[in-house]
Image: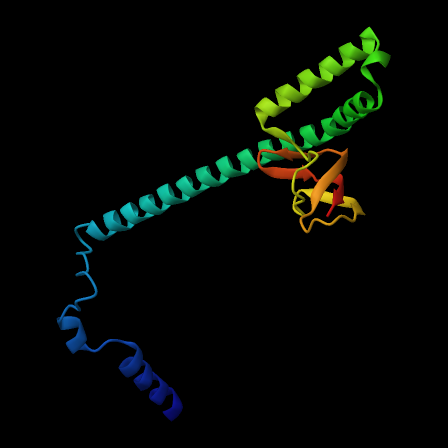
Length: 178
């Protein structure tokens, strides 16, 4: 019984504010609304409405961002799927001389050039050209030719690399000299 009384006394003295604290409003806390006027409920409703508006704005921004990321990823996949076809066309153009081209081959190469120009207008750029300085971020060196130069320069492009809207989809496969 004594233990229960001691706990009750401790609870009343330490956990509940004293009467002297309730008589003076604290500077940090706004005065409590009158429960009979309904002002407290309106304040709670206004705060709930503000939270709901903020949550909706966050939801809207998140779904917009997610949608844009999904569209971008789909575009990346489509362009990446077209790269082997472009590579095949340009490899054929590289191996055949102009005298060996038939009218059909010229037409196919014109279609490849048109496809590349459409993709270039949308943000595709070819990486790797002869004489360009070697950059490990966008080039993949598969052969090195020793020269007196200290700077690495692209000697030959074995397979062009592609960059889509600022991101490297595939690095260029090159021979470097230097």
